[in-house]
Length: 119
Image 1 (cartoon, rainbow, N blue to C red):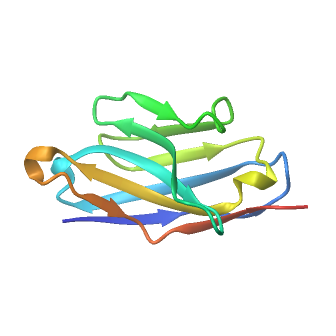
Image 2: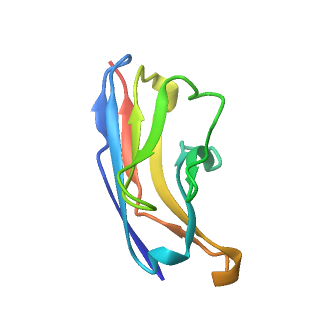
Image 3: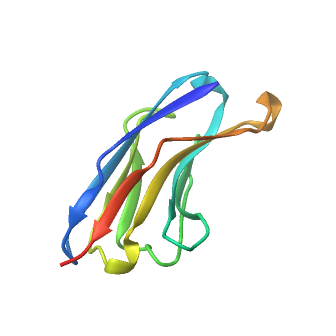
């Protein structure tokens, strides 16, 4: 089992910045990748950014050049630095940890943190 605790989020004006943090505990040796997803009202949850245990990253096209995923240690904690925020970035952001297939390949989720971009 992996437990995820998120922090950060809040209300910011367009063009502003926010930083999300996610700390994993429990069987962290089973984690192959960590990432951030978001879900806006009436929309499906989508991948925002992801970093593998080896350090490879990938981003949604809509956030490339504005958001950066990083970490202090392997594999946790993980951060999402969000710059040049737009109203369309408004959503609940969820931290995700994915296990190696050999450990079951399960996905674990944080409780979610609201990000609202509005003037």
